[in-house]
Amino acid sequence: MTEKAKRCSKCGQVKAHSAFYKRKSTACGCQPACKECSAARAADYYLRHRERLIATRLAYYYKHRESALVKRRRHERLHASEYAERLRARRKKNPLIPRARGTARRHLSPEPCSKCGSTDQIHAHHDDYNQPLDVVWLCHVCHSHLHAILRRKELANV
Image 1 (cartoon, rainbow, N blue to C red):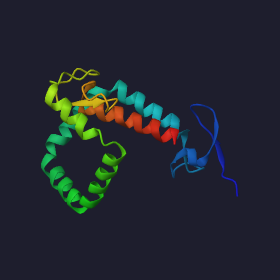
Image 2: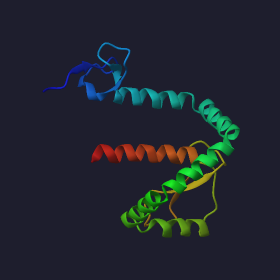
Image 3: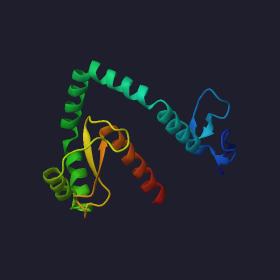
Image 4: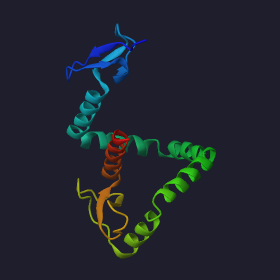
């Protein structure tokens, strides 16, 4: 049985229904734009409204910090073995990570984020763990965003 197809309202390409997010209120049960166009639109929105979105998230975080901490600790306790397994797999995949982090921590001083200039929660990003002193300084938000992009590229190449 063949899957139904639909034309994306943004890019105009005809794609299978699985390439669209679901929406029960439409006749076909799909969003009008495909997942790729929806992701591009969301990324564009984030870039245009970044400051406001970060401020809103931080305000929510500070307002609900205690309950979030309790939930996170409970979740970590329940899933400790999964976390340990993921950490073992990550270290097995690239055993140079801990050495690079330690070397950077001992020999370098954090600088402001190279993308946004923030000085809060600065991380040292390594493009190559064989070069432990070659780092890009990023705030937590920019570092997370960079790794999300890298994960998407990695998944696209698989």
